[in-house]
Length: 367
Image (cartoon, rainbow, N blue to C red; front, side, top):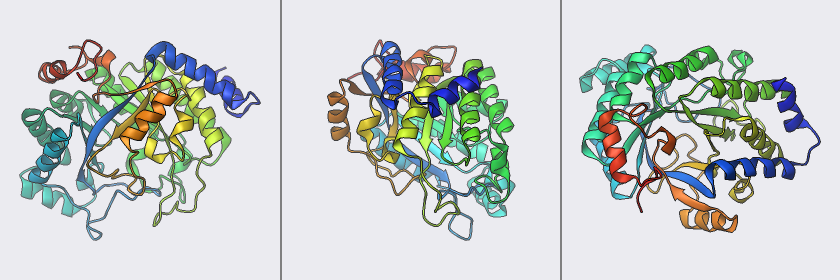
């Protein structure tokens, strides 16, 4: 039984170094010596949201300054990203805030739009048409029709599953007051992406659950989703970091040894074509994770902060290259879409044309 196997690896007595070694071997067999990252800029399209998660500092109410960027601001960030050698314009935004806030709808109407989806789509189109940088959006729950629009102007999108635990929706837990965090709705978005053939990044937020059973179940369910859904191109295992001025500011953070065991276990059971990422700015020591089974370090920006985790600075790229080299591997740049999804089945014709212009025969940016 999958659950028993996973629990035995995560909480069993097998040495962590042995688990990591097995996971690293799988990584080498399927991704070689490369560890990739995506040079990007954050575009926080709106800090308004209909949800209120207990660990989030990104979201603001209208009273606290929640707002939308205008199109000139979006263009300015994209232009800086392009001139800085970035390939990804990461749109981060709250999930359809106009469903909760009249202020959000008023601002959208002032811009000439009737929904956040319409406004996001137009900004993605604008970047696609004007820059050699690729939109990658995380707008929350998405319908088939919405994904169809996003696919016209971007090679990929993202939606974190975070956790499969229904207990997190209870009062006092991480997702109480978060309407869009019902796991069935989030899985449905991934199913919609598979129907449209739109590559997706997803993953878990490790540390927001409270019991061993919740953690094991999250890993089991994640693996099963990945086995069923061909649209998943990448899994992020993001370690929870407590933030000041949040309800979960005093919650404990995951320790290195347990996190290493989780990473190795996921790599061992994950379909081998799916990339595995941990965010390097959230790690206490990047070095010990380079041979954990990961093949990617996510988006790293030379120009913008991590708007979701603003207290955690990006690692220095030159130092990261040295650390990667010392581990016997090579740090390389990538696009927001992985090479095995670069084809006319998964990417729209106009976007694919742009992708092919800047990638080599292996699907990575030309040197």
